View 1 (cartoon, one colour):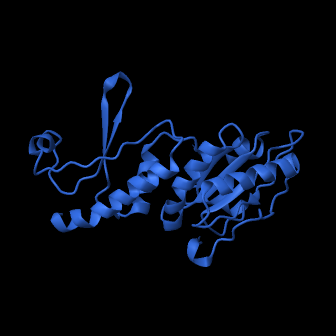
View 2 (cartoon, helix red, strand yellow):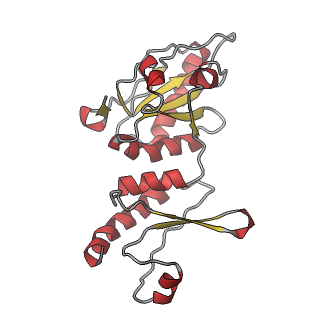
View 3 (cartoon, helix red, strand yellow):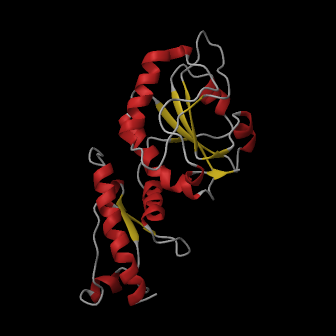
Length: 232
């Protein structure tokens, strides 16, 4: 990599910084974006063992003062969507990764859950991930959020009748200790819908339906276009 790659990355990096700042204004874990000119500050770059350009790194201070360093995967695209997904994975998260205990964790829970059914290869899932993380912040204390990898836990996704990715289902919480249906209420989203609008709609559903929210319904709002989802 060299000067051409640096010139391609620069506008994507600036857009990423602006986008992250606008969508994480209330995030207590503030992320600082910075760039270093390794021609001007060669000693610093040598100290950090930077031997290819441009290099993207995530620095995190751990307890005890130790610095954790993560390099951006060399085989990943360097565009805003992919870099944003990578940062989302690096940052502390309120979203719980659900494994094979989906029934006990979600369907038997008396608390409402919002679940993101996704696949690792799904480009639209990568684009939606930061929005889902933002939803977790907006709905913190009201709704628990989780995500399920449908590649690993395909039987769960089949039972939930997932037929494209990402697909978001809302579970209102079990009533009288009765297990909920596997198919929750679908929450429609699209690329133009921000997290604030989705959170507002979910609060309205909870107020309207509460524990009586049935499975298999589709929440009003925004139908995903065929170009905004990845079919199974």
